[in-house]
Length: 263
Image 1 (cartoon, rainbow, N blue to C red):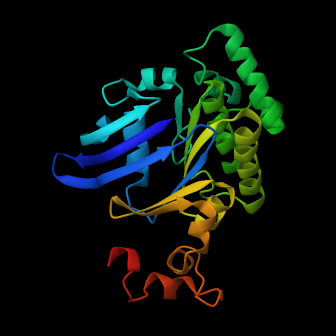
Image 2: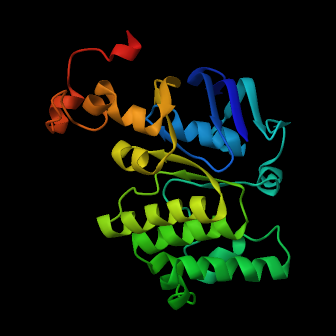
């Protein structure tokens, strides 16, 4: 479905943010893209959506394609038409517009009937939004705003939904709801999902396949279950020692031994 091949991304034609990244998201798959802050995860999503230009970012080399069609030269709205919809980190709502007006913005490329059906689907997934559809979005809780951001993307009718840090700053109960929704969209609608998360344990729990990005390049990939069992991943991303004992985050963060995959 979605394929990236040897993608290199530069900012200001000087700073290399992503180097020779190759990855795939198959039809009906949930793929987790994991890594620490600054690893290049968000940049990869922006490259797929072709929204690097506000930050003077550019795909210098490599290929990005959806179902065999080149995406690199397409404008962002055409990429949405092709079926890729991006939920950015931090929600990015229109704060002075109502919930329903925000949701309707996701359907700006759809006709009236498709928009109405899309709103009904979102309200079915998130009944709380139906109750608050006339509320101003800027006054919602963080969890409700995340529901609006995901709902707005769903109104566009994506084949592939890209979620950037959907759990960031949310209460555990809301995180559970968001992840249950991700799984339901995949299982019941066959929607492919590319999930960027710093919470590796959470992402690997719902994903079929995973990639770990370090310093702008993929250093490890494989089925999610296998990655979750990898001893280095347990130590550096799940906070567990080889014996399965939970380690202090500070100890993991400052651990001196180099990761074996970077050796």
